[in-house]
Image 1 (spheres, one colour):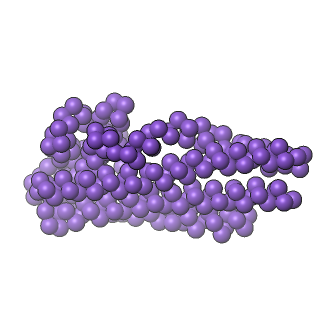
Image 2 (cartoon, helix red, strand yellow; image 1 turned 180 degrees about the horizontal axis):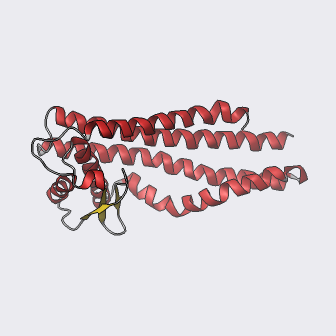
Image 3 (cartoon, helix red, strand yellow; image 1 turned 180 degrees about the vertical axis):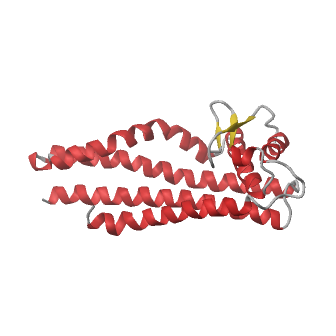
Length: 231
């Protein structure tokens, strides 16, 4: 804990905690707003997928809360227990959001291609960046070579920032596709549609918060490494 953490990272962490609490509260609120058509999250997702010619994409239940995701390697949408068989506007919004990701992969949406391409190097960066920075900082007094090792760690951490940055348009676009399908096919109408919109809007804010935390951590690390060079 130092001044750079308090000034840069801590506000982003507080923002992240607020966003996480907001998405849970919003989901819980609209999980009690049931639809007139009575479609479950799984049924709504199946309807949207079929309308977009994605009959080969499977839908499966998965344990946990808000663990919903699309797995492109298995070509399956996995919906959490609170979404799969639930007929609420929140469940339908989340389920159709995941169909948005399936559609993105099917049409070759560019940010998804970039995100998928950098996953391997992002995994490497997330594992090696902090150890390299720590080693570089601890041994920086022994020469510039160790400072450069710390900068290499910062560069690897920067890839994580890029990953989070590319994730934003991917998530916003998936929600946009979902809401267009929901509205066009009258899956939800009126206040029901507003419930789904508010749920997805709250969920999107968590990705903004994640980017903010990662970016502030990156700036803090750069300041620490540059400070060690001056010392």
